Structures are given as C-alpha cells and as structure tokens.
Length: 314
Image (cartoon, rainbow, N blue to C red):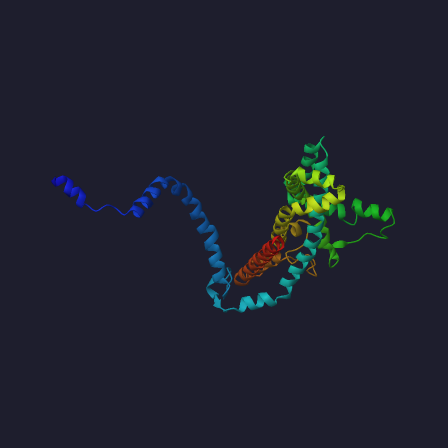
C-alpha cells in the first residue's frame, strides 16, 4: 500500500511537455542532419544580407576600411536618384520586352508543334534543349561573331539588299540590348518549350473532344482551351524571366563590353553598375545599397505579378 500510495502521489509530467520531448528525441537525427545547412544559411545567407544592410548607412571602402563614415540615408537617396542606375534598369526593360516575347512565343509555337507529332518528338526536344545546357559565355561568343559586322548574318543582309553597309551595332544606343535578347532567346527558348509542352500534356483531352463536337477547329481550340489552361506555366516563366533579367551580368561581359556597359552605357545593367561601384570605385557602402534596391525591386515586381494572376483568376 505504501508503494502504491507513493506512486500515486508522484506528480506526472505534463502531457504536452512529454509529447514535445518525445518528438524532439524521435527527430533528433533529423535536427543533426539539418543543422549544417541551417548554419551555412546563417553564415553565407543571412549574415551577408544583414551586413550589406548595415553598410548602406556608411561611406565604406575595403581599400581604407578605417576611414568609414556614417552617412545615414545618403546612399539610399543617391541610389534612388542615380541616373546611371536607372539607365541600367531601362536597358533591362528593353531587353526583357524583346526577350520574354520571343522566348515564350517561340517556345509556345514549338511546344504546340511537338505536341502534335509522335515520331521523333524526343529527338527534337533534345535538340531544342541543347542550348540551355551550353555555357552562356560560349553561346554569347558565338552569337556575337554571327551578328558582327563581318559575320554571316550581316553579309547575307548586304547581299540581299537589306543593308547598304555593315552595322556596328555595339555603338548604337538600343541595339546591344536587342541583340543580347536575340542571343538569349536562342539559348533559353528550350526551357519554355519543355515547360509549356508538359502543360499541354496535362490538359484533359475531353475538353478538345467536346469542343470538336461543338464545331471548334484548331485555332479556336488553341485560343479558347490551350492558352487559358497554360496560364500557370506562362506566369511561372514570366516571373523567372523578370528575376533573371534584372540580374543580367555574364551576357554583357561575354561580348566585350566593359563593366560600365560601353562608352554611352548602352549595355549597362544594374548588376554591372553595382559591380563597378564595389570593385572599380571600391565604394562598398553604395554598392550594398544598389544591391538591396535591386532586391526590393525584384520582390515588388514578383508580388505585383502574383497579385495580378490572383485577381485575374478571381
């Protein structure tokens, strides 16, 4: 009786606390395996972000770190009003207007053609996807040589009477970003083709059968069934293209432009300008500000795109 009463008088652990401790013990190895990745994110992700935000309030150079001076929001005001930064944004807008239209338009047409063929579809999918897995530097160099004043494209255009003389397009105000968009279209349209083709295979064939019974034909089916059903895939491609476009860097370097995008900044991008501020002028505080402004711009545009697609769906 004594032992029973003693056991009865011993307080039991709270059910919630015991359950939590049991879950922690059961998932201990999970925490062990996840912890290195959390640590890496804190060291190489969160810490650099916090440090960049901190440096935006200082005139800081890694050449003379001891001469750091507090400037408040001066870097932010300068970044928002910097004409070269906004010239880079405008160049990207022009580039992406051409690139997104051509890349997704060609990808949509190619996907529609591949959707209708049965023999050789896998072979053609592979061929169209090869530029995607090819180095950006390699493809930009090839495209630069093809489009150069002495390249095959301009020679053919002169022979056909389209041009009177070679065009040195790198010196023009808008042509560099348009040519870069054309070369990038060649590289990336395979991504659009694969994603849109997968979306087409996911459309219920009974929709097409019902439309055919009602007398609909190819174009009507494509316009009223295929395109609306591909809206999620097209939206995904749009978001990814905008994010990647605003981070353009390698493409401009690969065809011989300086970090300032040429004499008249005709190929300048926000990331190139950020790079120039950090490593050419050693103005790390201002470069950090430009980087965060670009991050906020990307986040804002992405949020607007999500809001648009949700309102359109409602």
